[in-house]
Image (cartoon, rainbow, N blue to C red; front, side, top):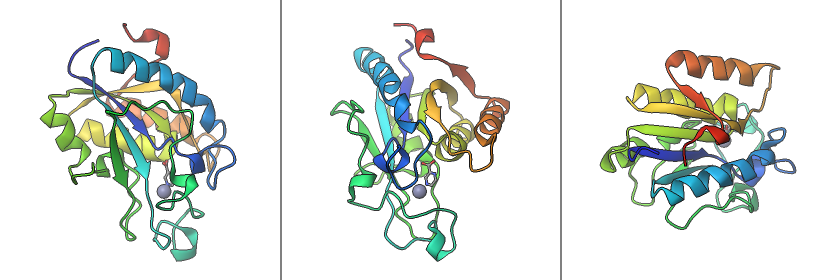
Length: 195
Ligand code: VGL
Ligand code: ZN
């Protein structure tokens, strides 16, 4: 795999999986597939980033305060933890987003590392030109991350087998994928990545 690539895993947290506060249908089924991607990127010495939705208890993002969603991924709760089977290597850069009570912050590009550096800056620092994106949810945070990635000038590849959507309206995820492809993203499945 080319040296200038990175893996970006979006919001694979308990609350977005079955049993969580805002479950994405079959959200947990992508975990073993993501683990295979993780292994490939790790073996190739390529950087891995994992975003997490990390909301305060009161935020405009939640229905009770004018937003779209039930409370989810509240800072420090079990629901905000990564899925327990997701095998993130210890070198993974965790990107936190959604802390601002006035913003939805769907995009992983709004996420920051522990030092406060945003994803685009982190990628540029490491000379990354191409990002492979999977996670939850296809029609919200994955879509937003992919569109921002393209806008920021990165090549973006969708890990088509490693994302699932909320589908508030049926077909939302399919439409999201079309929109990401139209924006210039490519697509790939696990068997398609050279080892
Ligand atoms: C997300 C809805 C609300 C996501 C986050 O990770 O896609 N969706 N907050
Ligand atoms: Zn959220």
